[in-house]
Each structure stands twice: as C-alpha cells, then as structure tokens.
Image 1 (tube, rainbow, N blue to C red):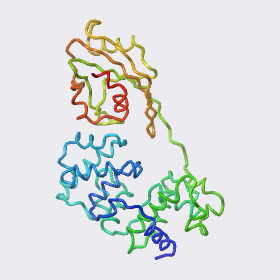
Image 2 (image 1 turned 60 degrees about the vertical axis):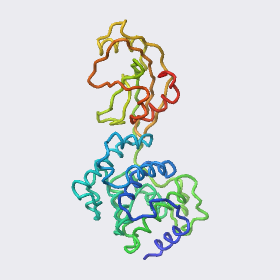
Image 3 (image 1 turned 180 degrees about the horizontal axis):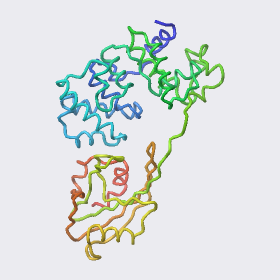
Amino acid sequence: MNEWSVKLIAWYSVHKRDLPWRHTKDPYVIWLSEVILQQTRVQQGLPYFEKFVSQFPTVKDLAKAPLQEVMQCWQGLGYYSRARNLHDAAMQVVEQFGGVFPASYEDIKRLKGVGPYTAAAIASFAFDLPYAVVDGNVYRVLSRHFGMRLPIDHVPSQKTYAELAQKLLPIDHAADFNQAIMEFGAVHCVPANPDCVNCIFSSSCVAFERGEVGLLPLKAGKVKVRERIFNYILLQKDGGVYMKERTEKDIWQHLWDFELVESDHFASEAEIVAHIQQKFSFSSADFLVQLHSQEFKHILTHQRIKARFWQVQIFSNLHDEVLKFVAIKALGNKPLPRLIEKFLNTHRQWLD
C-alpha cells in the first residue's frame, strides 16, 4: 500500500462518522444509502434512509411496493428520478437476479440509475471488490492535493481523475480507502475554508503550497438555469380539490399537483377565468374565483420556479381525463412536490 493511502486510511480510522450503513455488508442497504445521499447531505438523508429501511427492509419488499408508496416515502428529498430508479432497479433485482442483489461490478452497474460511482461504492463496501469511487468529494481531494487543473465537469478529465483514484486504491483495502477519501473530502477538505494548516497532507498538497485551495477543483462552465412561472388553480368542491399526477417527462414525475397554467408571466384573474371556461366548458355561473396567494419561489439545480396559487370554487361537475377529485383528508396520501407542501403549510385554511 502506498504511503498516501496508508496515511488517509489511518486518518479515517480516527475521524470517521458513525453512520448506520457503515455497520453492514448488505448490498441492498448500502445501495439505499448511496442513492439517498446523491445530491443530499448526510444530516438530511439519514431520516429518509431509516424510513426506507424500516418500510422496505429487503429489496423484494421495495420491488413489490406500489410506486406511489415509494414516492411518498421519498417526498421532500428532491431529485425524484432517484426514487423511480430505485423502484425500477429493485424490480430488476427480483426479475433478473431472483431477488438476490448482484455481486459483480458489471451486474450492479446494469441496474437502473446505477452509474460507475454507485456501482464502485456497492462493489467495494459490500463485496470488497477493488473499484475506486469518484464523487465530488474525491474530485476535490485529488484536484487539490495533486494540483490537477483539469475541469471536473469535462468527461476526458473525469477519466483522468478516475484513473488516478484507481492507481491509489490499495486492492486489499478497497472499502476502507473509498470510505476514507470520501469522508476526508466531506469533513476536512471541504469546499470552503478547509483547515489546511492542520491537514495531514499539508506538507505535500500542491494547492496549499501554491495558494490555490480556493480555486480548485475547476469547472469548465456554469449550469444554465431555466426560469419558469407556474399559475396553479385549486378547483375545490364538496370538501375536496381536483389534482393530477405528473406523468410527463419533466420535474416531479409521478408526484401530484393542481391544475397548472405555465406561462411567461403571472396570470391575471381574467386569464384564469378564460382558461377555466375554455378547458372545462364552464359558464360564469359554474365557478367563482376567490383568492390568489402571494408569490412562492422554488429553486432547483437547473430551474428557478415562481408560483402563484388561485382558489376557485366550482359548482358543477368537472369531467376531465387527468384531474382527479381528492378529499381534503386524503391529501396526505398523495406524494407531493415540496413547492405544493410549502403552499399547503401556509394556506391550509383555504381547504377548511
């Protein structure tokens, strides 16, 4: 084992956090933790991990659960494609591997939503296979220590980082090394203001020597953010509200929201009235526009959403292939986007 890896693993043995998925070799549990922690901090993800393990203790339990139950369990965590992929992959394990989680790197990587990083993590943590993990923490540690100015969002550069990580990986201690380098990036070599003076690698870190810690790792370009304006219409009648499942390939797929008019501006009351009359063939006597909410903002990685909600009482039967009547008391049974949750938490009186 090379000296750098020895020093890193020794640091990990002293400073590692006590996390539940580090006390098992069960590939299913490790997989759950890895998927939940993608784009999610440990503190936020831990309650979801515990909820999933409790509600779906085996991969077979997850596979046979209805998708809506899985989505509801995931509600509030964001990046909902992860939940859909979890469910699809669990069914793959049951259908293609007899309910036994695959034990080879290549088979693990064939599961829905599992890329090279997650496959390497499961393969090394559960089966002690010698595959190096490369995530954001690993990019940062390698870039800074070795003075690598290759942009981490550039595919050829990512290959170079992966090759270096694999070269540093001690074959007989793959799990410890992978855990150690990710933990080091997560709690010590952090993005902003790391404690370089008291770092175990301060004497060999190129970025520290050159004063470039704050500059590395480099990225080639910024993420383009899409601006969207949502005008939501709460069509209410007889103790319930009409909602729809989002089935299109867009954000919040398989979550539930209200009738939506998306435009480049906040709609006026006249525009809301016109939309309702045209879409549902209502006359002015069939409904009453009552209130609209203040502006809500919801920020995603690639999108910035501004939303306003309109309260509308309807007096006639509504016939629509997409909108479904949901009793107010049953709202908690539907998986909802965080934006809808925030609205309901502040405007629950609208539904009383």
